[in-house]
Length: 202
Image 1 (tube, rainbow, N blue to C red):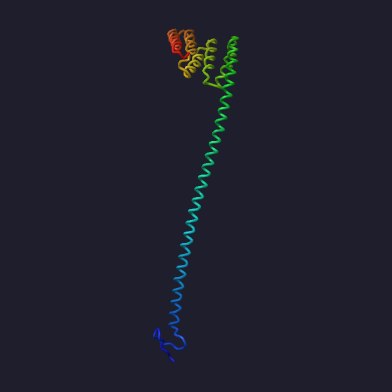
Image 2 (image 1 turned 45 degrees about the vertical axis):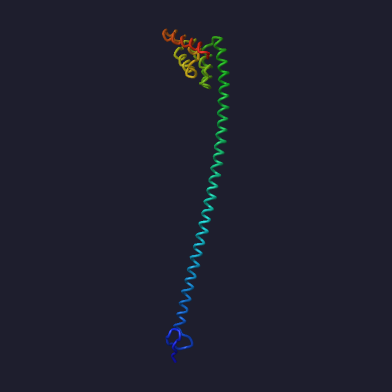
């Protein structure tokens, strides 16, 4: 016999209204889906927050690591530059000492009038220390004694580039100019030499 459901008004036969049962099941499923969706959304948001936190932490650690590496690299570069500077200084000092030794030897050979040998030794000293003004002067004088006037002039002018008031260079240049037949130039170099004597530096 058909029975009318007091809740939905549908007629049914049996002990329970199938329409209400389907409705209850549908509503429960809808509620479960909403709950599941919320749980998934909450879990996703939580995962994103954790991922963002992890990302920020990794970026911070990376920045710290990069800064530490940069600092260490700068220290290593500075240390290497300091070592290189000391090596260059040691080499330069050794070259200066060797150049002075060669200059002394060249002077002894020149005093013995062994001018060719003296020139060879003096040029070796200049190769080691090109800015040694005394070596330039001595080499210029030896070239003058060997009548190598152009070469003498080159060395003496190099000495004057190091010190424009260097008396010995002007004096020897006046001799070179005189022996080369350039008398006016010789006079000018002589006047400059006298000027150096009166300037109080020589």
